[in-house]
Length: 319
Image 1: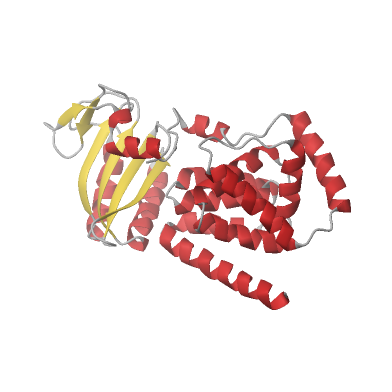
Image 2: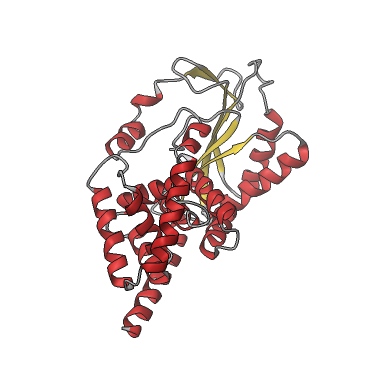
């Protein structure tokens, strides 16, 4: 569910009352080092539980160390989380510690000294099968996931920057033709399981298209209806291949797609790139705030649909 194998992490799976019981947010956070950090983390988790109407949760702590029940690593943190959840009427169904996520590894329970077991093959779970059918990749680590968004070769990116400057001076196409080009590329990406391969001229033209406000508004629709998987593939390619600061827009759109399908980790990575490229980009700042507050994806979807609808009406009025 995270999209990568966690390490030195607290992983929290939740169930909500919505459609009840329904799998809610799956959260991964770095393990805190001191009491102040623990309290801050517990408060943040509590806010997410409240905003998402969570009724029960399961915790897995992944970090090195030795098992000597009841003295497991980070027991104090688990005690603080348990107390917080009880105050919120959230049932902690299980809390376990494991040194690493690997086949045959032994896990131990924080709640019962005699409770332990071995990890089954994560690659054969039902969720893993669903992800495989949907073309989703599970990375070996968070760093490996981040590498997917690493920029292209510096010389190639510089060449695209030159193309962008040249196209920007001579391009006078209207928004409708630019929207059509982006939509066609998304549809092509949706029909192919791998990331689309685009030449430098295509990348430059698509980047110019995304600089148009009407096209960006149209892209919000592409993220939530029609071919969101194709849109996410295209935004991923453009995030890697477009120069700064233009890469901020596809990175933001990638963050939106990822968050709406439940991948807050990838969304956060994409938004970090977007805000590094353009710190004042309003949509990126809004999405960053939503993630930090634990806003449910359904609420974000509603905001995006409203915004896209308003933009569509404005566009028709202009025509």
